Image (cartoon, rainbow, N blue to C red; front, side, top):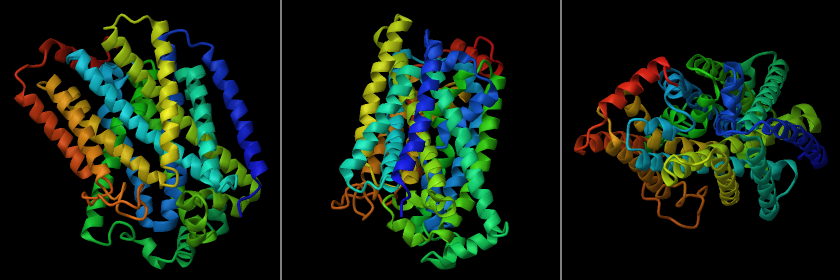
Length: 521
């Protein structure tokens, strides 16, 4: 039972027409690099906070977490806790300081007191790699959603729809830039919050506003029974799965502060005060959302049943849409479909904009042309690179179609925490930190994380692996964060101490004053 594909498609097309019009109107004012990269720095804290929530609340949040809770109960909710707690790191450690120090990209911050060309090259490499992994997760979510909503079961049909989603996303970035993408994210965040709030209130009302009643019925309709109400279903069976949980938690909590598309949003506000307000608004919005996922996840298990969810074309990712069909019929399913598609489009557009901006601003403008690039040419380079990244994300999404998207996003978080967090914190808070430490930190984190993922059960050696017929899983954990994050901090530390070159004390002092006060930003 998948509802009416025509209604689902109609609601989504209506949303698409509205957002394309908004993007077109907003894009008419993109005349400078500040307009294209940072929306003219004219967003208020509440506006940027909603856009941050729209950028962050991805398909993994809406579809993956609800499915993980419906199938694994308590252990699935750990994703919600990790994604939310991570914002405290952003609020307390990096948000305001990054806004004061940088201009458009993470490379601006890391290269502020270092040698420009090698550090910008490393920052761009990190940004593009993380953005690609995140984009693949979103595009894979699009494939699973389409399979459920449009009743397309063959891989070719799903691949064609993934390509269509990717082309629309490329249009958003090419025409709208940061301003157009921001308004799509704000609209999407508002629709998503309205949708999950209505579903949560309905579920609570149906069970007499008793969460316990929802959880009891969910346990009755789950093969694992009451085990889903306590820890251990997914991550507590053995010492190895417990260690995997610790690794996952580290990646989730520490990853947000290194996500390039989230960090880039800090540059769209006029000052540090609005940057702080952005994070506060984003945190409150996401607190409500992630609490609602608990009700929706258990509600899906209670009313739809775990076996039905797993048997659906989208697997775990189908929990929220199937619940919408059960409680509101084809109309509510169509609305949920449109919101989920909007979620994928908005997040992938933000990621594509970030990756293309990093290439154009860090690589082309500051490495290739050594700071002499004309603004118009730089924007054209950003648009061309956006097309390239969009095509790559389409290919990656087709290859990863069918994977659990919450899990794929957790891998992207591991890459972000491994490659970026150590260098950001050291740059902001350690006076002696230098260029060698920056390069060692970024590349060691990226390389170790990638190598461990390739050698993990994620890629081979398990039924749910990308290549289930092969087995070269020599690293036993599915998430490498517990190893790759400390490796990055350690190598950044060693690179600094083993280098003969010292950091520039004047630039370090300027960066400290600027990050703490905002003077010169």
